Length: 227
Image 1 (tube, helix red, strand yellow):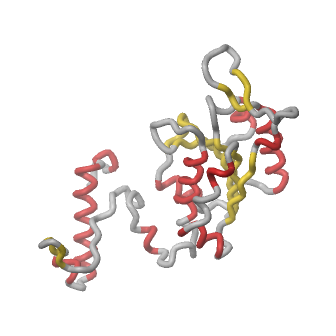
Image 2 (image 1 turned 180 degrees about the vertical axis):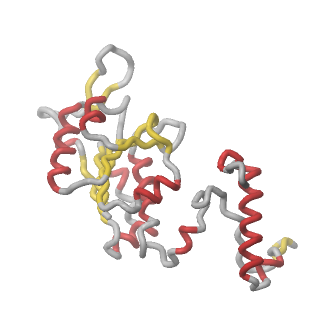
Image 3 (image 1 turned 90 degrees about the horizontal axis):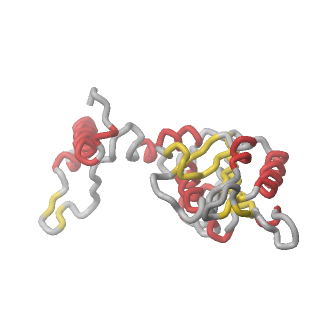
């Protein structure tokens, strides 16, 4: 998979992709992340990329010309399955979206700043708009890193045990069950006996029941009427 990220602040994205699972994905040749600085596409000597918004009001807007040049040049190099703008008014990101996007070949992410990007760029280029939650960030870089992490770990071969991702929270609209490791007793708290039994069917049943109960308690909105 190839992911391009257009950003005003490329330095914010240097660390997230150089460690842990995403670094492993890159080392295996399964994921390549390209950081595209927007500033060189800016206008004039000062490389301007933002301006006051028409109609007045506080806050600057990212200009059409720099973004259009940058996106057009990127599209000339490769065909993108989706051009994604990270914005608070986009569709809320979830595990199902991560699963679908992980099947893509090439993705282009646009990190917004200030009051956002000129609407005409959204009309001309953007094919998908994503929000990472009902809150506002200073820019789209952290949201982009979150997106890449959620998608990248699902690429076959990235995780040492590929079945691990299939049992994560939200994969089946349930929260993950409690997990335990050694020692079997800690501060007088014992690991549930069923997990020590070696009985696979009983363990699976226990985990499902625990996931269901946890979801009912913490995220009842995830459940349908059949559960």
